[in-house]
Image (tube, rainbow, N blue to C red):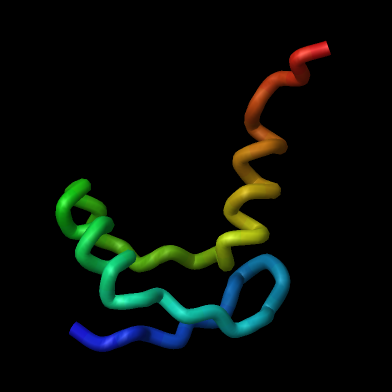
Length: 53
């Protein structure tokens, strides 16, 4: 496996899906590559999480 360059579907910026991340995804049973960069992934996760206030 080699590093992959992917375009984030939210912000349109390019990010690298490293070989190590690919191995992790495979170990977890994920079949699809990520479609969002780490920053957008984190923001999306925060949106889904209910407010702790």
